Structure formats: C-alpha cells, structure tokens
Length: 415
Image 1: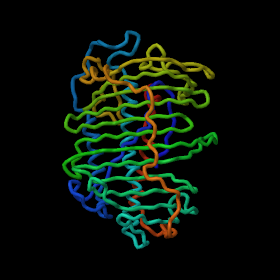
Image 2: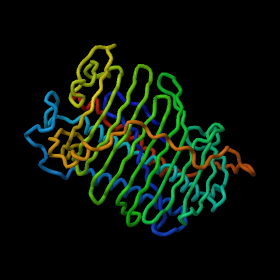
Image 3: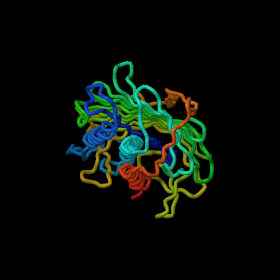
Image 4: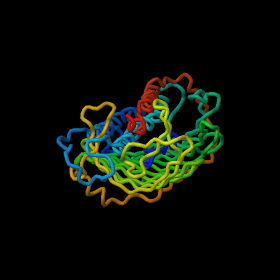
C-alpha cells in the first residue's frame, strides 16, 4: 500500500491524504457475488469517484475577483495575488485522486490472477492460503496472503484478504457492496528507509463510504485516513457532495523529526473552483532551499499566507498563527493555480470561520482481522511470473506519473 511521506516544510498542513474507492458488483443495489468480473468492472466505480471529485472542483464559478480586500490581513497579500493555501488544498485533493489508483492496484492483481490458469481461486466463506512467487520488485521472496469472499451481517457480499511481509502481518483489506454504494477499509503496517538511511516504521488505515444510484453514478463519498510513524502522526477526512457540488477537507499533523517540529490543523471547504481554508499551526523547522534561485526561504511569520522571505543557511523558521484565506482557481490553468479572493466573496467563508479545526490526530485502526501468517494446512504456491499484469502496470505507471507531475506549492509560491 501507500508509503506515508513526511513533507511539512511550511506552515500549511501537508496532507498525506488517500481517496480510496470501494468496489461493487454488477449491481451495487443487490447482494450479488464479488467475482472476478465484478472486481474488473469496479473500474466504473473508480472512474465515477474520480469524475465526482473533478466535477465538484471544476472552476465554473465566475466573477469572484473583487477589487476590494475586505477580510484580508492589512500586512498580507492582496486580493488577486497567488494563493499559497489554494495550492496546498488542491495538492491534498490531487493526492486523494492518485490514491484511488493505489487502491485499484491490488484489486487489479486479484482480478488478473483469478482469470489466469495459475490455480489462484478466491473461495466463499473459507480462506485460501497462498505463497506467491515472482510478484513485483521482491520476486525472490514469497508473498503470503489469505483471501476469501463472504456475506456480512447485513447480507452484503464482501472481499477480504490479509498479507504478510517478513513474517509479520502487513495488510488487512476489506470492501463490501452495500445498498446503492460501497464500503471499504484497509489497515497496513509499513517500514520505510529515508534517504539518510534512517529506518522508520508505523501503521496506517484508510476508510471509505460511497453511495450512488449505480456503479457509474457515485453521488457522495467520505474518506478517512490515519497514520503514525517515526515522523509523527496525522489524520484527515475528505467529504464529497455531488448534489451540492462541494467538498470538505480537514486534517491534522503533529510530529518531530531531527530539527523539525510541527502541529498543524486545517479545515477547508470549497466547490466549483472556489474555496476557503482555516489553518492553525505551531512549527519550527529549517528553511527550504530553492535550487533555481540558490537561496533559502522561510514562510512570512507576519502573514504565512504571503510570499516566503529570504533567509540565510542555518537560520530556523518558526511561528504560530491562526488564519483564514479564500481562493479561486484560475480558469483553464494547467497545472492548477489559485488567486486570493475577498473572504466576503467565498460562500464557504462563514462555515470555515466556525469549523472545528482538528487539534489532534485520530489514531489508525488496528487490523480488524488479525493473522499470525500461518496456514492450517499449508500454503498453495502460485507462480505469478506468468500472469499477465500489464493492465495493473498501467495503473502503477499512472500513480508514478502523478507523483512526478505534482508541483511543489513552495516552488509555486516563488514564481
């Protein structure tokens, strides 16, 4: 699953967010079996969720660039300036969009394995235990999983699997059909090595509820994401309303790593290209380096939503603030850029003023289905090297391209 990255070089909350779609059968209003075909056809649901996020955030609103500057700090940026906050909120939503594909990846592998002649079968009610060889970058090490389909207490069909890495459980994955929608939950433990060789471990969990009229029409969704690791802990929630064409994004991160510490909470609301965000933060960290300008910068402590200020190498950036900014996407901008608008021109400003900014992170959920990585009657070995995973590789490439294409909000603010 995903690797949580600690990248919090400014006061604005760096949201390691994940938008995970669920998977339904051919008709999500029924309790039909989750077979290989329905897993494959889940692309309709994934595409619908991606489309919903894009529709909610389309820049169709007009005429919001007021000439006045009501509601803006007198020593801060003016209406019409670039919005640093809008960039960060958009980056958080883009990470969610990419993480839809991250959820699609294991489902794609299950579907392709079932359609192969490898002997991989997902049984009803009882777990099948597999030792999978030749899968991915660690092809010399077997990948242990157990997997089954079952009917939950509500009478809905579900798919559930656990995975083990190096003798310990690393994944617990479940998604179910529900009335006119889907529910999904994944919990995972991870171990990453930072560029300096530091090993950090932790765990995370992601949940989703989504509803609609059918697989191709998702009308609302709520996604939650939680994690903790060596760097700190964080959580976030995204809500999409396809009827009102609005989103709500909130989150918190707190942690210390080396000479960096941060506690930041944010809540943001928006839709159709306009939004407002309320950020509360207390942080201390090194300045960030701009290799193009060959200079070091810190956020402006008098108004952290304004352009960063130049400092010298070895200085320390610090500050505490509680501030609101409203923004609008520049029409037809690609990649997206944002300008500050008058708070009075944002229909979301009043809600953001009164929103409850998170002051602590929600802890990740434990594995709902613990597994000791053993098989009662032994594991069935599956040679995955001969299974056609080309469709899944396309999804992985889309994820990598998204990572490469995401522009740094810090660099955007300097242009």
